[in-house]
Image (cartoon, rainbow, N blue to C red; front, top):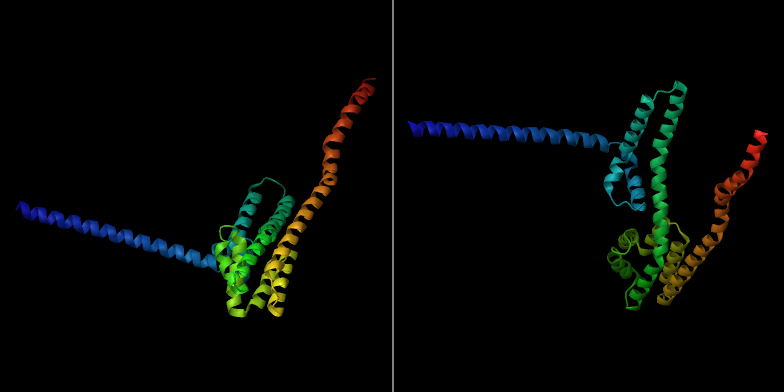
Length: 271
């Protein structure tokens, strides 16, 4: 009798544990289904311009495709937050309307402005690091590599040096295998619109068309780019004194004038 009762108790315990596991699996499946529906709803925002947006995000140095998916929902959420703060403020209706208009403009333009500024910063950084690429490519050409092989090799070796430059070189190498190196180089100059990149692309294309030696040309071009960067820095340093004169007058000279004239004005008022 004792064994029979123990057997029934064990079976009841096993059935109870099985039911708990089934309930847990069903609840997890329902949660996953709800989250997948939410994700699919979010993904629909801006689907028509997804490819162009992904390219802009990558050109801005953000190598995460998730940002392109959630870019438009983030803008909507940002606008909703701004609208909520405007709504709870205890101000006049006219002021609220003005703030709503400002919130719309901010939510629409501010993310695009930040993305554009990051893209310009990436272009500037790539242009600064381009002479190092020319030196490495010159060494690759001297060892007997072709231009295509140099791009393929440097697309792997530049990862630790400059991730953005490595991405552009890798994309150029991949496009060159499909469309030809000429079109790939033209696409590179369009993605990185800078005078340094244009000079580099024209030099490579002329070498491909006329078959001239390019190793020394690349080294000379890298040296010219470094000189131009140095001249740019010197020019900025020369303009710095003129730019500092305005805050110098406003923040130092004006308080000094006020301190000099204040005692006389106070004495005249007392008299």
